[in-house]
Image (cartoon, rainbow, N blue to C red; front, side, top):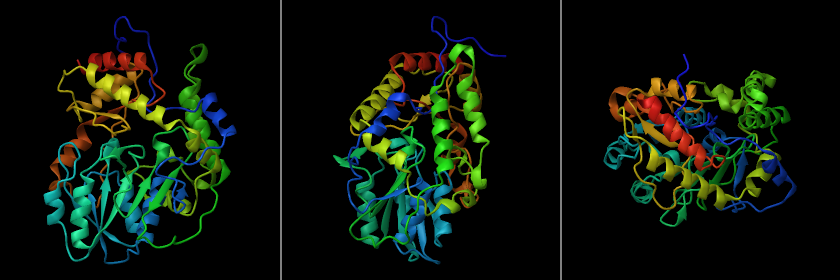
Length: 388
């Protein structure tokens, strides 16, 4: 039975991610240079972030017997990308908020370790300067995973410019059909293999899926949802949509796209975006939700402040009743996601209780640039009603 919408507030549909709109498509008519930090001519424009991690391992010359140290809190695709490149993996601990445990990282070092992967979760920077300093003292490469944080900064510098090589996934922040990027530092060797354009059918499918997020419910009909459900069943060449890739999927879904570059449509939309306005709106929505989020039913935000320079991807909250809260929010029209609830079989879960708690209790809420203050206010009331 559907629960009532919070009193005094008109029903809304709050999607988890921004959708494609006509003004967004109109940007295709312009030509704009790439944003920082993608202005380096050595940037590889890739189909998605998983492709970037695979190619990063290859660019660093990692091979059988080499070990990459990863945070135990990850989505799983990072593990598969590194294993597919031929290297081995080991895991270091994180705190209750996903922040890297530097002392545990130091304990995990072995002579076989050749690189350390740093994931800036949800756009919030890890202690990257300290990690780079430690890695340099051990002769390790540093791979920055900026899939959540391509517009975030730390100490006045863009994330992704601290380590030796960085991977980005701007499609997670923008309504574009595909898009990853690999930013190599000056000490990294030349590209391992040439890139080819993606299959146009995959680009079309992702564009339709994105448009469905913005279609809403015209004339009371759920056209947007129907459009997305229909297109997600289309798998040309047997390849699944990007939205269905995750840690519960095997790397075989990504393997056929390892040499695909970003589509021209996605790259032009990315470059033409007003990035300063995107950051401003995401920060504003995050701050407003942080201010108005009710502290009830054991619910708490994962981060209790928004540091300068952070462009948040989502608004993560922690609740022991996460699954029930997710269902009730959906009944109120708020799209949420039980983030990274799947654990890769290679991770020794018993050694990482903080990660187990995050996988079972973390829920992310939308704060993207397509939402306004009224949407965020509605969402805060809906969360309160659902949590109670």
